[in-house]
Length: 256
Length: 220
Image: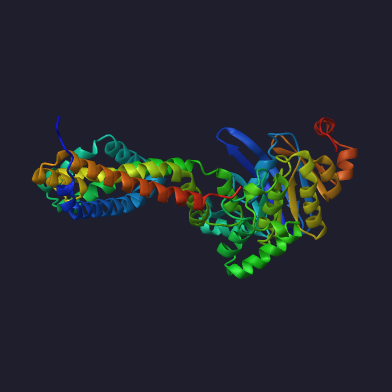
């Protein structure tokens, strides 16, 4: 068994006849911060969503801490694991979404508490104190009793990140978390992610924020037409792209 | 015309009307409670990917919603005994209204379920909730809030449908009113009082539901 936190082998994903992932390999160590960049339709979000089984995949394997995610092979047939088992595996990762997806009928604190109570089986008091700690960490201690509809987009996204992190995942997945935000709200969210990276959180980020990817990542993956087009450390990738596709992609991206 | 309104005969039998109203409310309450459960199960059936669940749900809703409730009431009470299913008149009516409200509520609930964004279910999955936990903690509470405004008119309509129980001599409000009408010949007075009782009850019901809607509204 390797010591890798995440190990993706030959990942294949189809929607009907359209193959969106055509054999993706990727490994990630504890504490790595990897940004996935690429044009839309290149498969970056799909790859992220396979890791926590929000998408099914037809070929290849994903392991977290050596544990095979989502499927098991017995007697030569590949079978989807039981829902309960998949739910347990999903809790190994945390995810923040482009559209925040906060539960609108719950306060910020209740949003964070739900998983702690239902999945981690904490008492409500215990869950509340964990929730308050994390809301404080993302700078929203005083807003804990506000409802999502009473918060700005940036604040909602920070609550969503707190909700995911509070579950103490081994790996955080960020799916274009700033794409739906007004420009002036982007930084407060990126700052929270940077803080988490500094604390050693392992993260996989799909992002269009090139400067941020450059600053925060230990590695960058460029996805192109369902495959990894190029990967390396951000400095080399952004300054000396090896493939024409990446060079072209970077030319059309903005660094601000 | 020369008709002078005289309510005294109706007032003398007023407690009879109140008993009738009590029975009307009981019939509605029991039938709608069963109908809610039936409707909820059917709504999930209607939205199921599995045909084995979806088709029976659709057939149930189609048949019941396209048959006049009076026909259903008469069928259950008069035709079912021929087939060996014998129910008392009250049980027979409650069963009919439950079945009827289940079909209407199924469509209401289905709309409410569809309006819950998929992203919220995914967010639930992502923190490790099971499908059942997502249904109970996220989907159902939001669905309920989505349907409350339209639920109120459906419930009031179902309550008024209890008057059809008079057709099989269940002694609810309409039946009692008809009895008083026949006994006292105060036609106008009797039906005015009965109508007022229906209007008052429905208004209270609507006010209660509006209050519930306000209490459950999400702060924004």
